[in-house]
Amino acid sequence: MTRSINSKTLWRASAALFLCAMLASPFHPGDAQSGKSAHYVTLEKTTGISTATFATAIEPIFDEENVGATQALVVMYNGKIVAERYGEGIEQETRLLSRSLGKTVTAALVGLMVSDGRLALDAPVPVKAWSQPGDPRGSITLRNLLQMTSGLEHKEDATPRYESDTVRMLFTDGAQDMAAYAESKPVARPAGNMFVYSSADTIILCDLMTRMLTTSENPDIRRKAMLEFIEGRLMAPAGLHSLTPEFDPHGTMIGGAMMHMTPRDYARFGDLLRNKGRVNGHQLLSARWVSFMTSPSLRNPAYGGHIWLNRQGPENPLFPGWAPKDLFGAVGHHGQYILVSPSQKLVVVRMGISTQQERVPLRAALARLIKLFPSS
Image 1 (cartoon, rainbow, N blue to C red):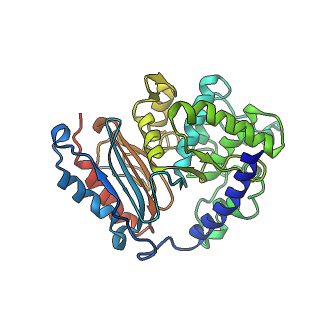
Image 2: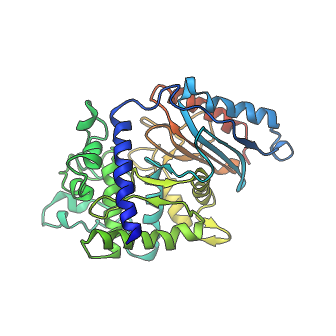
């Protein structure tokens, strides 16, 4: 019961902060100062990268005048942390808001349920609101939701911002039951026909998972069921002990925007994907599922299963042409990144707050850092 009360309190506090960030401009230079706490491992013998070169490549990522406020940077090479630096007020144990990084964590949880046989990738999803004969939404599959091709009417962004479906779902008329808001949307096009980035698709996935665990409509029971699944199947075996998901008042996990982890745990999650779902010699997440997540979808070659791929495609926030083609990543609204480059044995996590303009030099700085590492 204590955990449920804490989840509600956390959701209210984060929702207020997140709404301010969504409706207003993110932090501007001067709002936070980069801290001096930094640790770099000597890589010259293994990669040819000198400590001075490494530190020089990292410095621009903390240049607040150009890239905004970087809260944390963690670089993991071959499973080991080789660089770590934090902004002022941020420490190793500080849990930072995921924003859309949570979508990729949600996809991993869906993969566990597919392996269990609770859900099937290409079967129509069992959403009660879509079960009437002739309802075109009844043909929407798990694959459609994961690849953002559900066909449901959705506006991720809008002007003014408060008119976007994402803001309405998270903070205004949909906030009390986000899944009901998302699932009530009509179809705008046939499922599978067009890529439309949609946080609502993620909320539907979260509701589906919860309903696989309990038939109860009691919010406390729904939260408890999902928390037990997450703790037992992902947090404990993967060592992601800081993972803290938030839930809406109906007890649906807000998997598309509101999870919290330490920067180190975001890196550990990225390394789980780099290793195709293996951790400590154990196949935690199906390698086939990771391959699905990181394979180009039919309607957007730069997007897989709730994760971005380093390929040419519409509005790709990664680095096509600047970094290896096998690189993939989770990307958050204000410049949060979990970047995974299997051929370089590399995971890079950047947490922070950057405007759209600041994300241009930020991406360039991250690309320069990644390019230091050799490909195998």
